[in-house]
Image 1 (cartoon, helix red, strand yellow):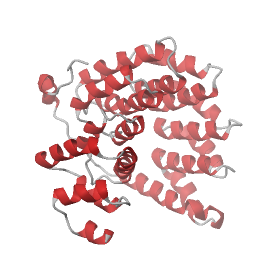
Image 2 (spheres, helix red, strand yellow; image 1 turned 120 degrees about the vertical axis):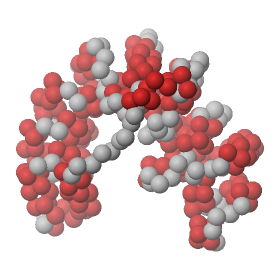
Image 3 (cartoon, helix red, strand yellow; image 1 turned 60 degrees about the vertical axis):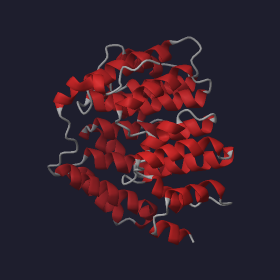
Length: 332
């Protein structure tokens, strides 16, 4: 029956009935919620609050997971609706699903959740979701005003007395890519914090900053006695992209912790070049690394892709003149 749903697009009313009324949720049916027409989106919005709490949580989480796994679906309009759901887990799932969103009309409601939601998990997820907007703005793929709108609010949350650690971590990580004079200070302070979780976020932020001032610290942490820190340092090294990290990352491909090994392999793929290629190619011939073959192949493909001349984005800077039409400065 699920194959039939997947292959055949159902009338929307029938789709809603199956999604909300069937005893078991059909995951293939969820794909039909991608790129909804305006009328269908309105029908979904009207029907959503009537669904059982458990079913709403199931649908929201699966939609978020599908978004992470596939670039061919677009559930962003649905997630915009789910941001106001009464259940915190649904709001978190909606925010997770917007991890790569670029619709600046969503900035205001996400900021509102960051600043006003009572649930720590929701506020932390809101901060994390804003990271992509900051990064895209700093890269010039969104208007500069996007970052200047968001970063001060993240700074305020980070500095506020009583802000939960989870929210502080997410705020620091989200603003790491921003060209703001106070960000390096916050990264340094977090790295010196007694809480190991803050140190992890500091190293994450070092990578996201793309600032080579942090390279020596990242290289040092590649040898941390803590596996979680080694993995985080490997990820940061990959983002920083310095060949100085290659020897340390090569060592980590032999680490006893699988998360560390995977992070090191991905980082080598991000750095690229002859030596990382040699290291990864040799790993493909190592029977003991069989469980990582897929990751290795993806890393080698990433290096091949990066070596080509690709244009990832095509942003017209003249669009920055149209900010008033973007809803960016809508009031909370």
